[in-house]
Each structure stands twice: as C-alpha cells, then as structure tokens.
Length: 435
Image (cartoon, rainbow, N blue to C red; front, top):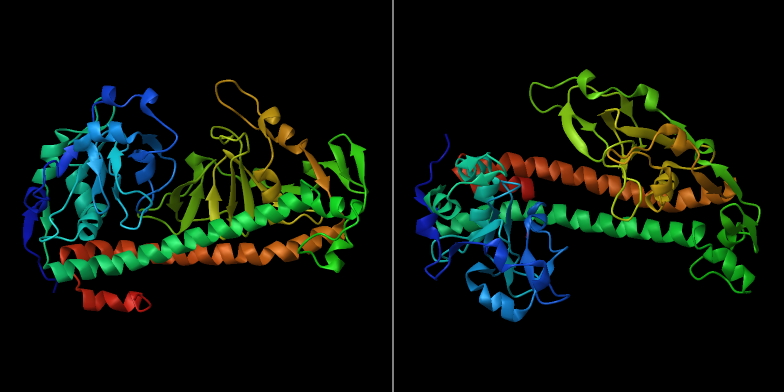
C-alpha cells in the first residue's frame, strides 16, 4: 500500500524574495545587438533539452544588461521552464556550474524555492515526472506557437506533493545518483569519441606518421611495429597528396549497402505500448516498436531531410543491436578491410555538400553516396587501426547500454517516489553504489 504525501502549491513553496516566480523579459528587451562574447549567459530552450541542464551553446549579455533585467536573473538551484515553444522543458541551474548568475530568455520562466520548505532538486524531479508534466501543460494553448496560458499564475497554482524535507532530499539524492551516473557515462563517451577521432585524423587525414618518417623521426606515441605499416612518402592523386601505395577508390568499394531491406514508416509494426526495439529515422530514434529488421552494428547516413549538420558533415548514426529503420537513412556496413568504426569516423569528417542535391529538400541519393572518394590504406594498417579503436567503441556501447538501463530505472522510480507510492528505503537497492 502506497503512502500519500500531503500537497501544497508552488505559490506556497516559492522563495520569499522578490521575483521568485518570474517570466523572461519581453523580446524587445533582449536583441541580437545585446550579445557579447563573454559575460552573463542567457538560458534558452537549447539549454533545457537534456536530462538536467545543458551548460553549452550560451549567448551572453554584459553585466550591465543583466542588471537591467534583474527580474529575469536566475541563480544556482533555481528551476527554469519553457513556457512558449517546446513545452515541457525543465532544467535546474547547477550548483557547481561555471557561472554565478544567468538570465532567462523571453520563452522561459523561473522558480526560486523556499529552502526552508522544499529541496529544489525534489521540485525539479516532480516537474520531470508524468504528474508534474501533466500539471505544467494543463493550460497549454496550441493556437499559433504552443504556449502556456498565463504562465506565472498557472505555475503558482500547480499542486505539488510535499514530503518532509529529509524525505525530499533522500528522493532527490536517489534520482540524482542515477542522473549523475548517466551524465558521467555521457562525458566518458564524449572523451572516447574524441580520442577515436583524433587517432583517425592523425593517421588518415593529416598523415602524421608518414610525415614523421619523411622528416626522419618516429611518430610520438606509436610503436615501431605500427609505424612500419606506414609508407615514408606522399604522392599526387586525384584527392591531392596521399601516402604512397594507398588507393583512392569510390566509397562503394568499401561498404555494404543494405537499403533494400528498409521498411518505410507505413510498414512498421506499431507497439500497443512502447516496444522493445528502436525505430530510426534519418537523424535519431523516432519510436520503439515490436519487431526489428536489422541486428548488429551498422552505420546510418541520412538520405533526405536532415542530411547535413552545421559543419557540412553528413548526419551519421552509429547503431547496434536489434532495430527497425525507415527509408530516410542509408544502412551501411564497412567492407574490404574497412571496419564499421573506420567507416563511421571517415563519414563524420567528410564534407558531404558536393554530393547533396535538392534546393528545398536536401537529398543524398545512393548514386552520389557511392561515388564519394575514399583513400584506402593497406589491409594490414586497416586491421591494426580496427584493433586499436575497437575497445573504445566497445566501451562506448557498454556505457550507452548502462545509461539506458539506469534511465529506465529512474523513469520507473520517479513517479512512484514523488507520489509516495514507494518509500526511499525500498528504492535504495537500485542505487547501492550511491554515496
């Protein structure tokens, strides 16, 4: 039998200081001309689209402009919501962040909590729960740009469960431990990917080991056996200077194309509830379904729609396991000594713009994809490279799988802890490693 917490309203737990619930400034009060290279960061929707808070891609205001927008200032521990645009976004300003204060944009509103009554992280997790999301979006207007009607007063009127403060902190600690581990895995994966990209660029783009030999010294950090696999000269090719003996081939010679197995959106098996298998589109997971058509490690490269990123590289996904995919992505594997990881790293640094057609709807058709030039090293070097980076990607896959499991545990515990259906002592077994 679950335990029922008493309830209160946001208005009753807000801080007693002025502007504890406030909206961002009118649009005319923050203009592009106000942005400066460094200063007080502006929190926008892009900073609220992660599990907690995305401390990147800020724009900045001067200290003087931030002072002018005093009611829109937020500080560590404050909770930020999107009230116009992508509704349902919630973030909490980190206590260990880089900045002492921030300003919210015109599409956000903020809540400062009374620390004598509530733990801000408990309130944050309440608004991440189905119960909190339902309450937050109850007064949504869909006419024009989606927006919450009367944002500040709607927020103040929301009822929220209120366990005793020690229980709030314990609930926030459990959910926070899960999120901390997920975030740690994400950062580890970022580092692993950065290492893999650096090795690929050094070996196969900048040709550092070849240039080192040409200059008469050993490549730093490379053993003699690996260095021996690189030639000691560069030669002219249709792709410019490349290591002597390496072939310039078309991409079709080093890939397997599995597009014929694709099934479009209308043909997928829709689950009555969320299915077990990810359903991929051109750029991301679109859904989870009850069946799969691929099993293994593959590279998905967008065919139409979201084809190019902001650096003119192709939109590429590294996927594994059992999955379904629609007809908006090419399904590729490495072939002829080129591993899937080698292929993915090559595509991630490629300028794809010359191969994309369509002025309104960008498209990378299979014919153009197949003719992309690829500089192919010797089979022995390809094998050595694969052995070097395979453990990195195995670690990335393991971290990702662990994070998916932790997220599922968090999402299952969240509404039950927030509502009092289960107590902290019953949930602690899921986070025994939590300090």
